Image (cartoon, rainbow, N blue to C red):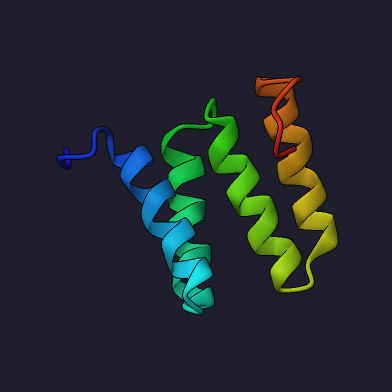
Length: 78
């Protein structure tokens, strides 16, 4: 476990950082890992959906957005 908390939270933060700093391939891997580690984390689904939009994969983005909304129907990002 990292100092930031559970592995999924760390991967979520790292993946978002990677995405915002142009490390797109690594971000996708890290964000998929975050969702796999905690499928009940709407923020992880949100970030992965944003990643898929950034790489022009709208159907995968939609799938992640729907999965996130199933977890939290009022999530601001989704």
